Picture (spheres, rainbow, N blue to C red):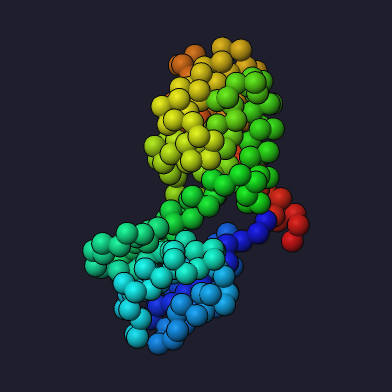
Length: 245
């Protein structure tokens, strides 16, 4: 599992660095809380993610944000700490108030990297996607159905997020990743779940989901099914990480 290489430029660098240590998805390459040549450091380190703060001394944020997409070979994702409303052509991927609670930071952090998580073959996503596939096969989900692939990808992405993304966001990620319309993705996933509830292994469904679902009460919604699937994918991934330590 390859973590996202991250640089931090903020007067709150010490706090941000401590928080990053609690999330294995991110590797802190370097941080600074004072005046420096931010662009040169980004060019030198080629990070996947940059956390910027417009309160950082000596940094013209408008100029920096304009240079990143034009002059970087591989522009990083950007999480910007700010109270201002900027009007860039290429805005930050996510913004956050400098007076943030810890939970809000982790949510913004993961929102900033969502498009990266949706890329094909991503080393973080693939093993979780395969775990979701194995779980679906144990339920006797018809793997020929497109919805099977869609919900396994959604579960893999969801399992990597500290707080659940909306189904709308997941459908948009599917659209970006597989060139399928959000409406078509929603229908395909719903069809796969309906098939599972009609023809799947109810004993396996009960064993996997316990009392959280009841076949007699009707099938779960797309969000409910994917959320439960993601929970088991995440638990499996954490168990594997502990075994490797």
